[in-house]
Structure formats: structure tokens, C-alpha cells
Image (cartoon, rainbow, N blue to C red):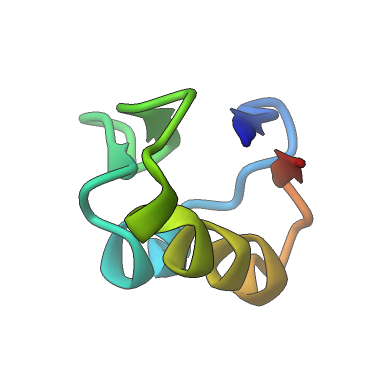
Length: 63
């Protein structure tokens, strides 16, 4: 799995960091930061859920 985030559309809701804190964080401006662009298998479910919950569609997961 590969995880990407488009910071230009991020609205800073923080659902990604709450859902998958091992994979995502927020910077000082509240925008998404990908901590682990290639998460291990145990984190895949949380990363997918974070992408599903993102209100702006900034999170992408590629299998």
C-alpha cells in the first residue's frame, strides 16, 4: 500500500490523524502530513478508513 495526501485540498479536519495516528499527523497549520507513505499491513485498514472519512478527499490509498 502507498498513502498520499494532497495538502492543497486539505481542510484540516484532522480525521486522518485521529483515525490513523501512526500514518498521519497535522502540521502547525493543521494540514495533513503523511508520516508513513508505505504503512505495514496492520495499518492498512486504518489508513483506508482515514481516506474514506476525509471530508476534502485529500487522502489517497493505492493498493
